[in-house]
View 1 (cartoon, rainbow, N blue to C red):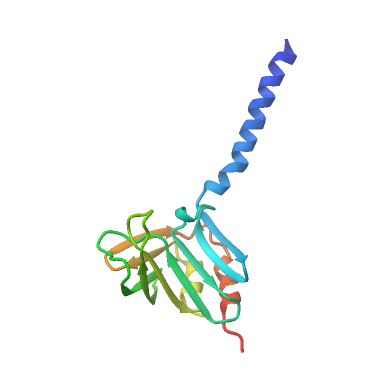
View 2: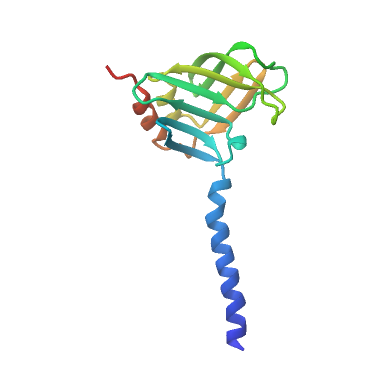
Amino acid sequence: MMARLAAPAMLVLIATTLAAYAQPADKRTWRLRTVDGQSMLSYGTDNAEDTPITFRCKPGQGVVKVFINETGAGVKPRQAMSASLIAGSVTAKLQGRTLVNEEAGTPSFDGSLPGGDPLFPALRQAKSLLMVVGPSRQQVPLRELGDKADKFEGLCRKRA
């Protein structure tokens, strides 16, 4: 009798454990990684469509590219425009372009800022990052960022 109950209980335990390990890939979080010689700091999941913002740079070059996956109503594709990233009292202004994003139905934004921009140290202190592109506003939390912004800034800073 005990053996009959033990097998299903063990299957439930294994399934629960596997589900717990599978969840982090689906959970939005801050990720710092290097891919094809570029350092990337992004917020989202492993699914690129569920990644609201990505910072990327070639280490030591001093320029950070910023990709905001989706903007909102009122933003037109293929337009040169500026965006703002706001963390606490620090605002970074970016120049860039909006891009067609057919899957989202709203344009994406691609811009850049200096690798040593004051935004990166401000991310450590702020509770959230506000992204403003034209009339579009969206916010992502910073509570799980830890020291990733500091490490990313160190990688991206221009080297003499």
